[in-house]
Length: 475
Image 1 (cartoon, one colour):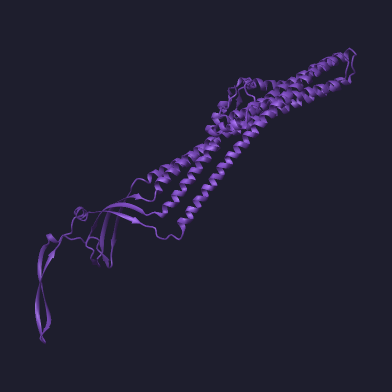
Image 2 (image 1 turned 45 degrees about the horizontal axis):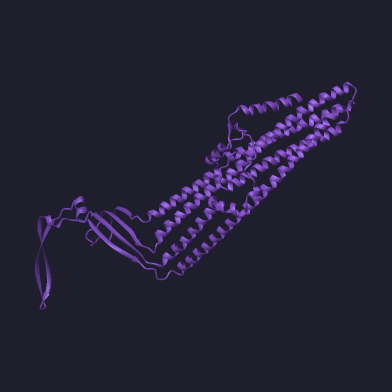
C-alpha cells in the first residue's frame, strides 16, 4: 500500500506537468470574459449607454402617424361637412404630426450630462469588479502553487521516512537498536503518507476554488503554470509610505473614480429638478386628410325631375294656396383619392406650458436632489477613507509578512541543521527514534511555515502592486 500510494502521488504530479498549463494572466483574462459577476457589471454598462443614447434622443423631434377606419350611425357629425347626419356613414382618416421641444429649463441638456456621468460610473464599477476578481484569482493561483509545493514536500517526506526505515532495519539486523524502532518508523511512514494524501486533497480543493472563479465545470482538466517564484528584490514594503501610495492609488483606483462620477451625476440631478420651475416651449406641425361616404360632388349633379308641392298660408285672414317647385338632382360621390386631395390640411404652431402651482412637487424634488448630492459626497468621502484604510492595512500586512518570512527562514535553517545532525546520530545508534521524530517534525513544521510565509509575502507585495496600478502577473 505504501508503494501504491507513493506511485499514485508521483503519477498525479507527472500528469499535471504533461497537460496544457494556464498562466496567471490567462486565468485573469478568461475570468474577465466569462465570470458572471463581470458579465453583470458589463450589462450595467450597456444599460447606462442606452440611457445616455435615450437622453440624447430627446433633442430630436417626435413624429407620429395615425389612421382610422370605421362606420358611424345615429345622429353624428359628418367628418367632411361637419353637418349633423342620421344616415350611416363610412369614414377613413389619415394624419401625421410632429413636435420638438424648444425650451424646457435645461432638462434635456442636464439629463444628457447626468447620463454621461452615470455611464462613466458604470464603466468604473465594471473595472473595479474586474480588478477585485483579478485579486481573488491571484490569491487562488498562489494557493495552488503553495499547495503543490506542500504536496511535493509531503512526497519527499514519505521517501525520506522509507529510507530511514531501511536504515533502521539494517541497524536492527546488526543488533545496534531494538526491534521497537522499526515499528515506530513504520508508524512514521504511515503518518507521512496520510499527510501526503491530505496535501493532495488541498491541491484539489485549491483547483476547485480557481475553477469556480473562472466559471469552469468541476471536472474541467485545468492545470496552471509553475513559474519560478522569486521574491522581488526591489520591493521593500518599508520604503512604502501611506501618503505617496495613496496619491498614486487615487489616480488609478476605479472605486474612487466611480464615487466622483456619482457625485457629478447627483449634481446634475439638482438642475434637472429645477427645470420644472421653467415653462416648456414646443413647436408642432401636422398634416391630415379624410374620406366620407356622404361626401357628394354638388358641382356635377345630374337633373332628374322637378317636384311640385302646395303650401297653404294665411294672408289677411284668408287661406292662400301657393305652389312650389323643387328640382331633383342626383349628386355623385366624390372619389376616394379626390377626397383625400380635397380634404388635405396642414397646420403649424407653438405651444407654451407655464407651471403655476404643482402642489409643491418641484420644491420637494429639488430638496430631494440636494440630499442626493449630500449622500454622494458622503459616499465619495467614505470611498477615500476606505482606500486609505486598505492601503494602510496592505502596507502593514506586507511589512509583517516580510518579518514573518525572515523569521521563518532562520527557523527553517536552524531546524534543518538540527535534523541533519539528529539523523546522523540516529544512524549511528546514538539516539532513539523519539529524538529523531521530534527533530523531523520540527523541521517539517518549519519548512511548511516557510512555504506559507513566502507565498503570503508574495501575495502581500502583489496587493501593493495593485494599488500602484501595476498588472497582476508572476515575473
